[in-house]
Image (cartoon, rainbow, N blue to C red; front, side):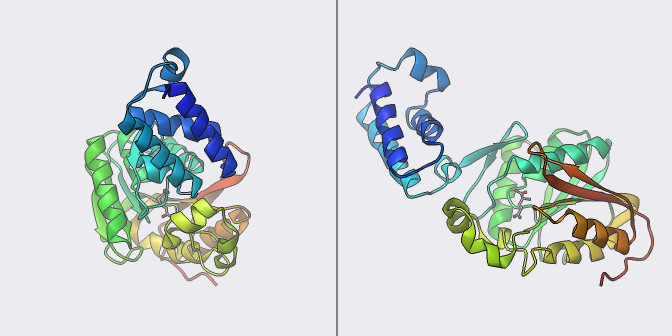
Length: 284
Ligand code: GLN
C-alpha cells in the first residue's frame, strides 16, 4: 500500500472512533511505524510501505481507537524540548506544567539544591537540571514504578538526579533552596468526568487530590518549611479555581511574597512563595 493511502486509512479509522486530533495522531503513529519524519508524507507519499510497517501501523491505530493515549503507544512525550519516556505508571507530562518549570527557572541560580515532590516521570526536576548549571536534584514519589521511569529518563538525558521513594517528605532529609511540586489536584468526585484517556490511562494516584482537590497542598505547605533554607522558595502547579485557597495556605504557613502566575491559556496555573524561615505552623 502507498504511504499516503495508509495515512488516509488511519485518519478515517480515528475519525470514526471520534478521536479529536485524528489527523495529527494518524500522522505521528505512521511516522513511528515507518521510521519516517514529517516531510515524508509531503515528499514521498506515493512510496510503498512494507507489510510489517502496514501491520504495525494498523495495530497502533486500533489501540488509539480504543482511546489509549498517543503517548502510551509511542512511549514518549516531549516536554520543555526534551523527550521523556512515559508508561502507564506515570502521569503524561502536560504542556501546562511547562509554565511551572519556566517560573522556577526565573529564580533558579547555579548550584542550588532542588527537591521535586511527586516527581512522576521526573519531567519537572530533569528539565530544571537540564537548563541550569551545577544544581543538585532530588525527586521523590510514593510510586516505585514511577521512580524507575524517572531514573530511566535521567539516564537517557545524561543527567544526574537522586530519586527517593516515600510518601511526600517521608524519606527526605536536609535543606533545599527550591521545592517544587505538581501534586495530584483533581477533586475525587470529578474523576469520573475526566476524558477517557486520562481517567482510564493516567495513574489514579497521580490525579486524585482528595475530596476538595487540595489535600496535597495542605500537606506540602505545612511541612515544606522544615526542608527549606530561610529565603528558599516553594512552587506549586495548581488546577482551575485553586489559586486563592493555595495562596492562603502558603501565607498562613509563613510564606511571604506569595504570587500567582497564569499559563498560556490565561488560567491561574502556578503559586509560589518565599519561606520566611519561621517555624512551620499548622494550617487550619
Ligand atoms: N511531576 C510529574 C508531572 O508533573 C507528576 C505529577 C503527578 O503525578 N501528579 O508530570
